[in-house]
Length: 472
Image (cartoon, rainbow, N blue to C red):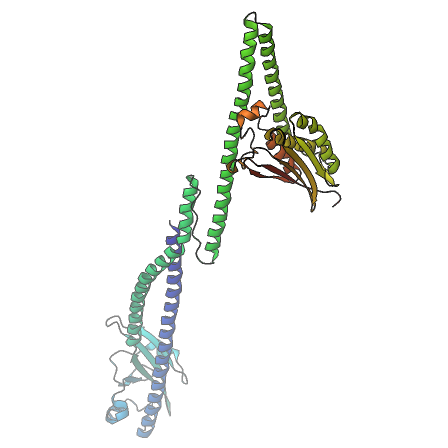
């Protein structure tokens, strides 16, 4: 069952119970109050009539003993009296004999037996033949030598008729209220559950793989908060899915690039090895083939070492020590100086004194890779500058070259494994596209990051921002 129907039925049940009970109690209380007023009026009339009858009897000298003989005289007196003419009552002796009666019903001996010489009573009866409701009152009439009994009857059928009319009206009102309330409750519940249905549709689209839809947030109630939280969850899910897709894509690219990087040197090695074993070759050809096999073998060795370093760094923690960054930068410059000189480049090292908590071996690898990339990108006669300085609670290392530069659209890809801007030139210089990926891992391991600024034909500036200065 739909939630809107549940809300409608629940509200109708509450409305019916509360309205039904309240209306029934109201009608019952009103009827009971009217009935008690009728009883009071009937008894008061019976008391007044009884007192007046006693006065007539006293004036006429009627006693219990001579009451039967004076019955006709009493009847004439009562008939001639304006007060008694329209009254319906009956006077009987204790033995049940009628002294006077304008009633068409017999005496109620059960009621007479319950009253005493000073008390009065009443009983409510329903006539089976006519269906009327009669209020039968009785009380004693005191004479000098005994008592008579007076009975009065009051027709109160109107009270019961009014009650039935009220019940009938109540039923029609309930039907009308149920009809109108059902429509109003359904429209209201349908409107209130609109955000929930919107959430359901968005959830269905998310389950089908479409992560762009979002639930509409209306108002500031709990459902709106739920919709807003749902949208935050959808954002997180979309972000995670995108990250997973990017990771899967990178993994596929990594595998494809790795296979390609292996295939190229292996093809050369197999080809030249086949030439060597195929027959007698001139000495220069044999030396050339052996040289190609050696160089491609070294390239495979460098590839495996770089790949191993990347995997190890990505799944390990740093061996944290206190590292003198000025000394580390100078040592990296000293190591790379021969290769720089061999290519005709000038290397400058300017580093501030500072102590950083980090892994000295990994930081040395970071510096050498950045310097080596700068060497490969710079033509003979150019300059490479290594700068190190304090940066708040961290240390900033900058390697600037005057090389070819990197296209702006490639800057966000250069830290991906096996990515090379100029593949042919990188392979010719022994590169495999893993150096910057390794540098990124090392920087993140030291709570830092890499930033790149480059202009084609002007050079590149790589900045490694590292955290955790020990003497901060």
